[in-house]
Length: 203
Ligand SMILES: [Fe+2]
Ligand SMILES: [Fe+2]
Image (cartoon, rainbow, N blue to C red; front, side):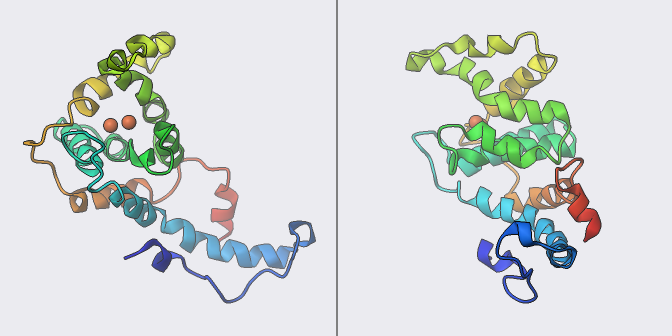
């Protein structure tokens, strides 16, 4: 099912303002009534976007979707909790839209739904993953050292060592995306924190 089929309320009752400064409480009641359905579809939209990584190899031994599944599977089989596994599954989802800063994109998507150390790990995993290859590209493999004093340093380093850098094995049998879908739905069912929480409450 395509993303466009999951956008509810594309038409129908709508706010009357042409500039937001003309808005009324009635307008915002209408918008607020639509928000919950729309926001509730975020897990499906994220999963649709993750599927865009399928078949995209970029010279790696396995495609980016398989790498994502393998990273998540390794974390899952190592007994990590659901928030952790979902972070592992989505950590490279930004490759398509954020080709020059993919960790930022994934971290922004995850931020409302996971605890701080997981958000931080996703946001900075590019520097930590670089430990394993930056020196082959004329870059500094110790780029991660700039974060040495951060309380999440070891946590992030462990994610890259155990799951991310280890997840390029074509012979590893990962769980399917369908296996992880319910976890994504549960973790993204409601935000732990959001700028727009008030809107959810009003819906
Ligand atoms: Fe990455
Ligand atoms: Fe990765």
